[in-house]
Length: 287
Image 1 (cartoon, rainbow, N blue to C red):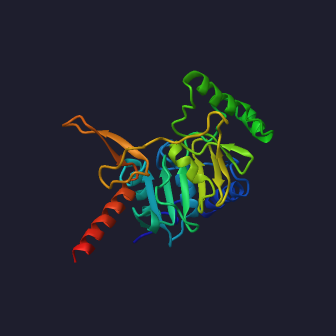
Image 2: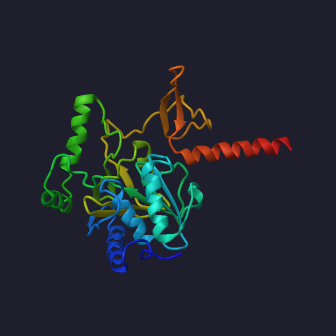
Image 3: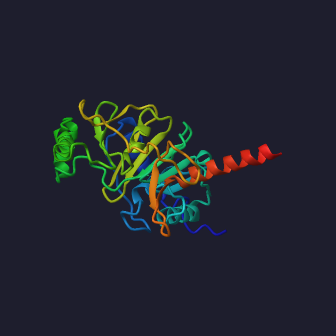
């Protein structure tokens, strides 16, 4: 087949520049490293930051998985896979365990990741202080001085107004005891998965031109108060109507015919694998 692009779309100099930013991000966990975000054949805001990270680190032997809010078959996930495959011809998979690189929008897979896997998260707004400080120069100074008063005040204001913090996603975290970081719009349910994880997590924001990282076995602590501790979404008493899982992040759905509420695993591949294992056990038991 005729090679229409350099491997992984970018020229080698561009990939080296992105890799240097990645290495600096790994060396300084949680620190936002500026990089020269490239023009991509997809619009900014559709995952260009994560895609640039993936294209910079992927090799011919890698196996790629791309998910969008838990689904392998959403428009965003499918089109990113198409672009990567067209420029690398790497193998893709829906199985988390088989993938060496997992690029994700808004979720961390339910299946725990291993040391030999890399999680790439797409990030729309990498600056956790942006809600109260619009100046990039000022936020950089605040990070340098470890002055995170604004982040704490934001959470305190939520508690005063609503009785608890209301960050449904992208809850700010402290990384390695130093930098306050935006973990991307993952739900609170996923935030604790970053803490002391076996895998490397890379976060890329194309529009904001930032790359940052959480290396393996790094302490990641959600910001909270002693009298208002961090808590995740509560699915007590609920289970997936497809696979029966009770310890996963669930989507609340409504049956159009009956109007009844039911729940399904947000991670569709994880749900399908549970059903497959269950059916395999039934078949084995019938033999």
